[in-house]
Image 1 (cartoon, rainbow, N blue to C red):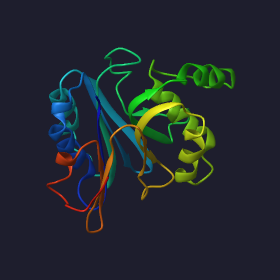
Image 2: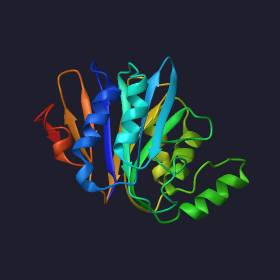
Image 3: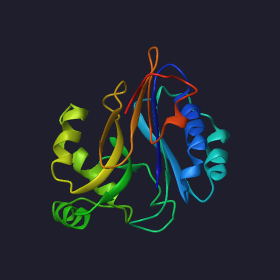
Length: 205
């Protein structure tokens, strides 16, 4: 049972999603990570182990960002390592994704993309989805996510960001929990209500 968090708005997005993860600690985890957009690039910080390890890495240089996604992971496909921790990049490091669920046909998709020249950095099913989104991206992140998910079999809740669309946070789900919180000039995603109740009571289930 993984934890998902995401934020787009005027607050410090990195601090906000980290605080969300702390409110999702009850879901259990063996690694955690954050992706945020800064200076036109997606940057990822992730650590195996306790959430406090990620906190130390983030607090050393608290970046200013208005868009971020975060994840706490229970290992399923791939062990609890820094490399297998979420978020994951696509092939070109222009897309980052977090995911809760199990992609049943990830191995076949991975083999297909390796044959197309893709290089994978982890053992996770999630990185396969990231590569699919990157493969279909043509300037519209929401459409790329739709196209990628047509190929996916299994359960998922995902959050996706792209360096070409700094004001867009895409979320989708099928069989795994994900909620959207609507604020004043800001939006949130999370696996569960406690992660956003401090910020808004306008929630889409």
